[in-house]
Length: 237
Image 1 (tube, rainbow, N blue to C red):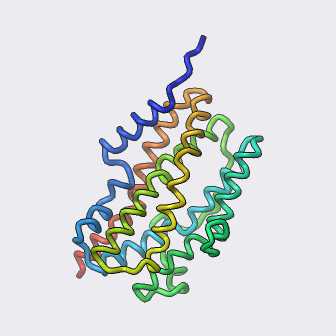
Image 2: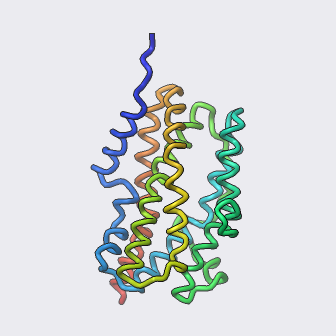
């Protein structure tokens, strides 16, 4: 008789591994520098430009998961709600696309929407996310996405909000994107824990989930660190 995997213990061990190897977006140098009050406003501006350009189309990943979802009405509603919220903000009450909320921070540096739209992403040109996901890969990829990005982003956003408010006198309005995600993403942890349990049912599911999560965590750390562009801003100042 097959032994059910201990998913909770797996997730604890996986998170421990991520943090011990400093692969989490919470290990980004930018976060540490902001909390230490070591940056200039020019450096924070450079980070904001790069981060916005790199993440403004990230919500389309949810559309890929929705299009490939199994015959599970509850899961489809969950994905549809998340995508609807990302695009419209109507469930949370912000009533605008989440990345449009980021304009509040960009405006603090005199960057308007037209200039924001022209910012070049270090990830390259926009590519539609409409790719197939094999059935045995679906929950592995969905859980990895949540564990590496959405779950730690709640803490990242709360800490950035606190540091930018305290150390640099940004207003709550300018930091709405962070306060919003600190609240919204905090509710997603249980969802992705459930997805991990379903990933465990796929062939070699937990091992593959570990590999995907480690890889995505490392990539997310680069993005949430603004690809280190704020270091360049310091060198040219």
